[in-house]
Length: 399
Image (tube, rainbow, N blue to C red; front, side, top):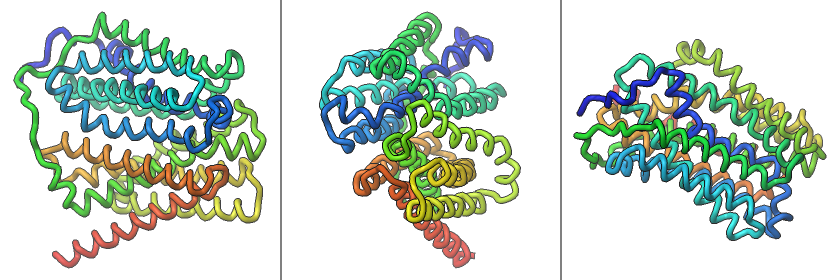
């Protein structure tokens, strides 16, 4: 592999200012949109199921992009993939602000996700190119995760304030403007980092697909991320339509779940070190089941409220953190020689399970109660615990 290009000799703060906007925008396009989800069927003249599709398609494309744009950036370079993706994201965002019917809106959300996926993949590929053998890599990944954790907390609040002050199109105009600023900065300072001697890998995915450990931990990752996906898919309709929250009030209530995840992350490391991968996954799934039980009780015996919907989600949020802290290591532990392909497959499978399974549950159970969240989390947690038990049994048999 060729040496890292000398032109990428930026200080750590400068590099973060250059790269982080693309990672944040990919997530922000999901979260900033949530406060207006209940109003979109009326605005677009369509059904809640079609509006749900605008969330699901975005999620699907972010996952598939791992498979598509990673190899593409290996062939043509990080910079062209990043710039093209960001321009597509900006263009789709501006067009979304002008859209007034369902079919163009859904198509534009898909194109927005394509652009976000390309830019995000190119960003992380650049981090690997430049910092893989440098101590700054730990700092960069930690800061990326910390800043990204605040997006679900602050994004809906920003979206509600924009929609209340300037109307719902201002949300997408804001995304477009921020993307244009990031692109202009990248055009000036983002130099190509792809090693010249890199050749495209043709490794097979079959070893991962045949691995019970890979599937157990990838299903665990899917359970955790799918729980949050179903939560933000249903929360606007439960809290705004059923509980009577304002868009801003909803955003603050929603943000508390993200804050619980941020706080838990600060302390999870010591517990994960004690419980290790298997123990952390088990406890994460048990927390999802406990939260699902409380949601079911609130649905049967109470009414939609902060206490019956958000507080049980706090417990599930803790379980999500314990789970995602170990699922990558557990799934990819035996595939260090094909880490790039394994990571791509891990995230792609998770994205497909979450988007397809989560969407079906939300549509099947109407999406305006706690039942979709309780049902998805319970089914996935039971599947993961069953797979984990089988994995342990196979381990004991072989020993």
